[in-house]
Image (cartoon, rainbow, N blue to C red; front, side, top):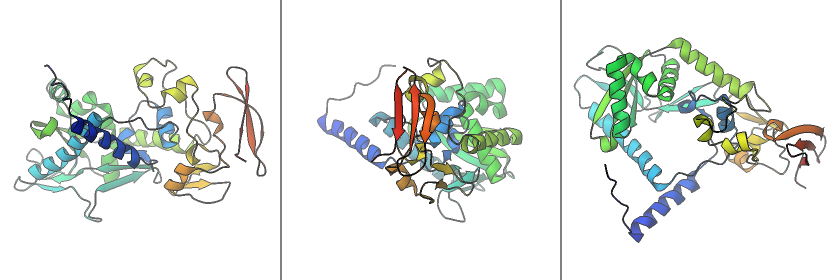
Length: 327
C-alpha cells in the first residue's frame, strides 16, 4: 500500500517542530521502574533505565502523534464499553478519582492500569483488569491469527510478551485473576479483544527479578542479556552506547555512588544524608562520583574521604582516568 507523501506545508512542519519541542521540554527523570517494562528480556537494560544512565531517545512528531492516538483511543474505547447494559468499567480509581496507579517492590516499581471491568458478556461475574492498545492493522491481524491458532488464553503471550508480562503483574497487584485487553486499529475503527488468565508464578518471578535489579546491584549493573552488540535486543536498546560502546553515562544523582534506593520507595543520598526529590536527583551536585560499574575501565585507586574524593580507573585503551568531584 503506497504511503501518502508528506505535504510541503510550512505550517504543518511548524506544528511538528512544536510537538517535538514541547515533548522534549516535558521530559523528566522517571520515578520508578515502569511496570510496562517489567517483561524486558535484559535486566541490565532495566537497571540502566532505573538509573537514567542514557539520555532519553528523541521521539519524532510521527511517534508523538501515534502516542496521542493511543491515548485518545483508550478514552474512546472506554466510552464505547460503557454503552453496554450491565457492564461496569472503572476507568478511574474509586478511592482517588484519578488514574489507577499501582506499585510494587517497595514502591520502586510503578504503573498505571487503564481500568477494571465487570460484566463482560463472555464472563459476566468475573472482574478483569482492562487495558487498551492502539496498533497498526498488521499487528492487529497477528493477534487475531494467534487467537485462532493457539486459543484465546495463550494468544497475548505469543503476540506480545511485554504486554502479557505487564498484565500478569497488574493482576497480581490488584488481586484479580483475569485480564481483558481491547486492541484497536488507528482511530479505533476496528477493535478485537483477548482475555488472559493469571499466572501467579510468572507474576512472582517477574517481581522478584525486578526487586533484584533494584536492590541487589548497588554500584554496578546486572549482566547483559547478550554479549553481541548486533543482537536485535541490544542493537535497538536505548542504552547501547553505554553498554556496548563504552560511552559515558549521564551525570546526575542516579548515576552517583552516594545515592541508593531505599525500601520505603525513596532514594537516599549518603553524602548529604537526605532523600532528594526527583527534580534534585535530575540536577545532581558538584560532589557526584559515578557508580564504578558504569565506567568502562578497571578501578585502580580511590580516596572517598573528605571534600575532594576521587576514584581512579585504568581505561580499556590503557589510559588513566580520574573521576573526581568538581572544585
